[in-house]
Length: 237
Image (cartoon, rainbow, N blue to C red):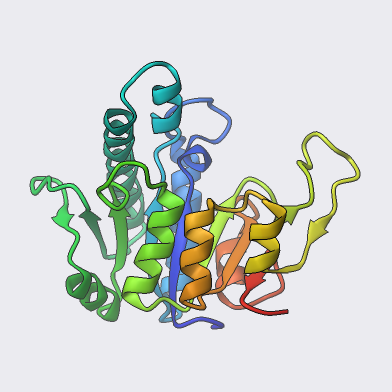
């Protein structure tokens, strides 16, 4: 496989499929199947999952909620997704641990860096919930932070599109997909791959990012194997 230790970032919206809200069990099962194939090769895999399919802090704030309060509600939504994903993975025969940045010992372990690394070394998939435990930070930033903490070789961002485009491909038929970009390209072009804090964290720690389509069968395995899939973002050309 192309990478030894991988941080996979899943958006909450990806889990809801075409439902518009909540979690689509078929999507969870598809992810579990792909993850099982990756883990079977010996790759160590950690996952950060968002919560936008249930609640998004920025939207709550825009509707009049206190921003910090809205973000905490969003963090709780990510734990719901993490536990659901854990159930799907374990039904596929994958040993899994959920670690939460907000203490909730009845359903998840607290986030402890050394313990997370030990789980990975034992072949368990670790799912990080509750973001980084602080408001005003996105789950993209959490993915970059956790990747740096556990020594991941790459951040894989699984999305609904097959890479990074110069403009929205759902609105513009002439949108052009990039095969490779540098971190500076992303920051200068404000391309919206991840928020600027997440990009800066990956840039400072020389952690490449691969953005790819989650819904292509076997795409997680292809990305982890280092195949030319989606868009790769690196420190230099």
